[in-house]
Image 1 (cartoon, rainbow, N blue to C red):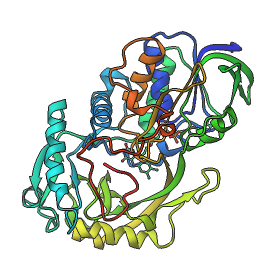
Image 2: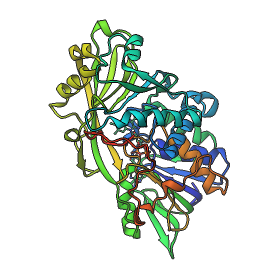
Image 3: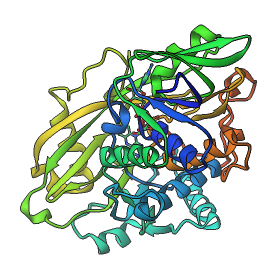
Image 4: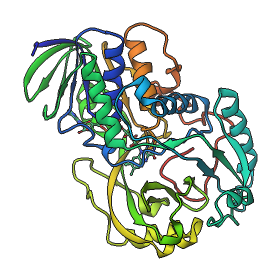
Length: 402
Ligand SMILES: Cc1cc2nc3c(=O)[nH]c(=O)nc-3n(C[C@H](O)[C@H](O)[C@H](O)COP(=O)(O)OP(=O)(O)OC[C@H]3O[C@@H](n4cnc5c(N)ncnc54)[C@H](O)[C@@H]3O)c2cc1C
């Protein structure tokens, strides 16, 4: 093992693995990835991995679009398997009294997605019910529907990405301990890992909410917090043998997708379901009340699911920024890049994030402009302005914006 690398990536989630892969593809020099546990030990192993592209701002829609295109044609781009399952994605918006304007915003946002090249349509609740008669859609005047999206197996995808990185020459170090950054005279010079100290000219920090502890001693205060969010796996009754659409259902306060044959993943929205926690000290299992909450939430959209059976579930962490948009790009410490703060919506974007960061690091043009994701933006006045004039308002907290 060399004691020095051109580029070190810290964090073996989908973002770190994708960045390492993209650097390997570019033959960017000697590259190593350091994961303190195993690949996909963090949010990437606990996620829903729904691939929505519906956003109310262009920069994130562009990342989601590029990310989805890689998942969809994984064997051609990455090699191996990510478990992509094609399925339509429905996004609903709150249109309750006081929030009716969301319907106009929905039309505008679907038009924006179409302009970018995303296959998305405005559909009525009746239209959805005609396609899937088991849906209850009384509260959906309009929704966005992406017929050609899907979901992936997140652990398979993250491992496959790391394997592809290794095939392109990247060293993958699992169980590397809590890697620390070494900075001298305002530039990163290396790392300290369980394997010892090593030099690196460039470091990419892709450690989710844990990046805060790595950056604070360097004088960079990233306002990222960890939100504990649960999901449950529900066995559907026999009458629901057919898979249902993927839903990011902010109207019903639930997100769902098929999980396996006859089973579905269900996550409950609402502020009372999300706790801010210490990322090193949170309960990784479901709360005792969660199975009932999940069944009752999903029954609002698919009534027969109320007769489903809870099988198992777990909690994971959203790494939340104050504006719920990620931080991606170079920091003011020379040679140090960060990609974190994905606020519960990073899986779909990760392959794109890797491609963009690798392009920036090697001095090429990024396929998506990363300027809006500037890690230091919270230090400037106006950081809290919406990223578009088509941002939705919600009567209940869904954990993240759209
Ligand atoms: C319940 C849930 C549902 C979600 N649903 C979706 C969804 O449907 N669609 C979507 O797009 N996104 C979703 N997300 C969000 C998505 O999963 C995350 O945005 C994404 O996985 C983040 O990837 P990451 O690589 O940045 O972080 P992580 O996967 O958390 O990886 C960070 C890694 O860094 C390692 N690490 C930490 N500190 C150190 C250190 N000092 N040294 C070395 N390694 C270290 C950790 O062990 C970890 O493996 C969901 C998240 C959760 C929790």
